[in-house]
Image (cartoon, rainbow, N blue to C red; front, top):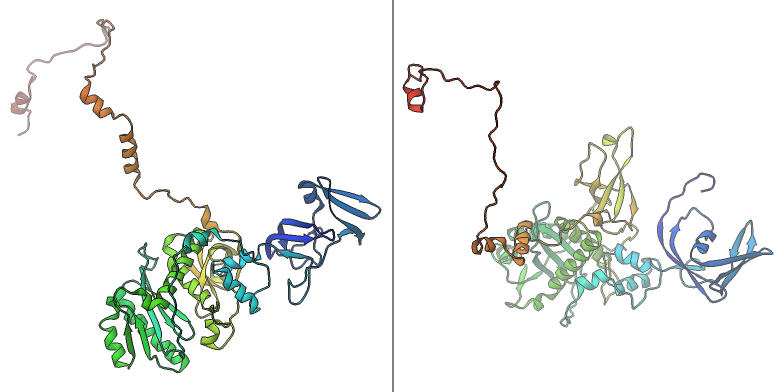
Length: 472
């Protein structure tokens, strides 16, 4: 500020001003600072981008390339632009400006969910109201979500825990940092609320089902009646015996018909696609896919189904979800160092990458990115709720990524094969050895270099070994 004070910047984006002349003035890289009581436009920036300002008699006229844009008048030591009020942009107040990129920011905060779900959240007044361009497309989502037409769904009227859909998904990728290679989903048919567990092997499926069963039956005071799964080996013995012991009907889908277990299969596909979109947009290493899956499932439980106006979270818990804690996955976060490891001299924060939410607890999970604190190593995963967010900065995108998975030696050998191979030339052509043509002359080193031969000294190796001074 002009008085050397500072204020926190809450966001940055593009803003449109509707002038009374009917023209729209687009401002780029606008900073959102709630502590400033007036909306300020820099005249120097307008001049930089080709606008002409004529100030005369307490009035200012704004033009560009001879075209009239708008005008303003002097007020309290500044010039106030004549702008139109845009109605319907906020439920509590009206404004002369509206954000262009709000849909893209919330698209990132909600883990690249589809825009129809964002419209649904706006309709339910869960998130701020803003315009969504129907022609706007997320390039990352197009890359990861392009699919064929889906099968028709079967509607059922069920109660919570009356039917659970489950499936194990193998990503066929590198393991997570904890050695997990799979994840298993448990989806309630009535509420569509989903639980996700990471697995090191498919044998752990029965253990995760026991944990899931104990938690949900205790929390909802109900019993699981049916479980539907495919015919994978993880759902045979002892899974069948467990269901029979607890009186649970285990429904198996027909062989090679994943459509019969469509709810679980569709959930796996949604989680994988959105996980890939989040990792591509953030640039985080592939061994963090487990954190991305868990974070995405946390968000999806707070997004309403296409056929219902309530979220799975609300149907499951009876409470409305809060969206104010959502952040763009993989963004830069400056996390406050806890007192035991805080330095007396130096920064109180460390640079981290946001990788998920804690359940339960209300805190966030971070991956240490750049630590100048000797007590905290890079790559460490920490949990904290004290952090400052930079949702438009992705520190992992600056890392170099290999463009090919083949070894360098293999590429070099292939490149050699494309040129004239010198080995073939050596086999077909006899190369003449080059010799010097200078005339050699005898050199004398003078009388200082003399050679003396001592009498009775051995001349050969055998004589030296057999001599009296040789080894005994």
